Image 1 (cartoon, rainbow, N blue to C red):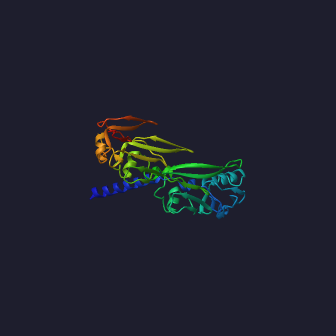
Image 2 (cartoon, rainbow, N blue to C red):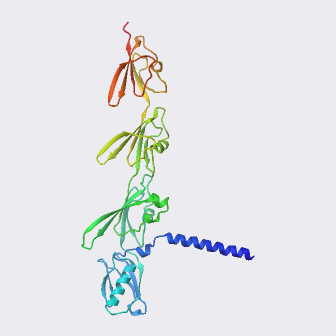
Image 3 (spheres, rainbow, N blue to C red):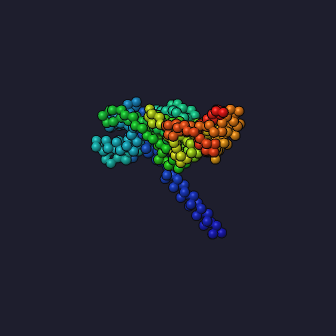
Length: 347
């Protein structure tokens, strides 16, 4: 019996330890909360009940009034900072020696934040009390399917000289949700604007499901091809182009399967085809299989017409930006984008 009791106490201690660990990992939002206009505070001084104020509202200009010391600044300060400010003034004014001041938040008021972009319910929200990024995402019914994993918070700040500037804070929601990085779950301030960008890329050409797809972290062309259902019957892994915007400019380059993708990239999988024209029964474009010769190409195109010549044929082939045309033999191998021309017999 004593053994089972000991095990039960040990289990309870383990649960308590885990709970304390989880609590220690959470941000101390209440301590870091910046007081705003219309917040209601309760203030007391230990041993001096006549200095207790059950409810004082922060004015629009960010001040509160306290007995003996008059107006003091409260807006954009934390609870601890207001406590120290009142204690310093009471001590320096010789009203109370070494006062122990306690400030409590009675009611949160007067804070609004705006969330825009790829969110299910964008708009302005009134928040009360310590509110984090995840709180506002929840209020706005979550991220849209095409939302990016990096959010931007625009925050207005006023310097000591009175100059107003806008600070940009970048937050990685993927690290927060999937990596447990609580540092990304910052507390919001009055007037913050949260922008959730669209994060998509495009894939076109010879894939089974061309279209726009959400850009996940670590997305490569290989993963993009998998999302698009793989290559189509004419698709070729060695013929992939990547179109990428760089400011006002746009560049196109060849890419391999391990190339990382960025927002708004366009992946184009080109066809593996050749063309045959002239004196054949079914001129046009055909899929280039491995080992296709001009002889096989003629067969794919339904054979020669009555005027076609087996000895008068030309192949036009790209060489970088240039195209070279040359006479060819019926056993010559055909390459990607070759244009085979079968001429009339002269006899």
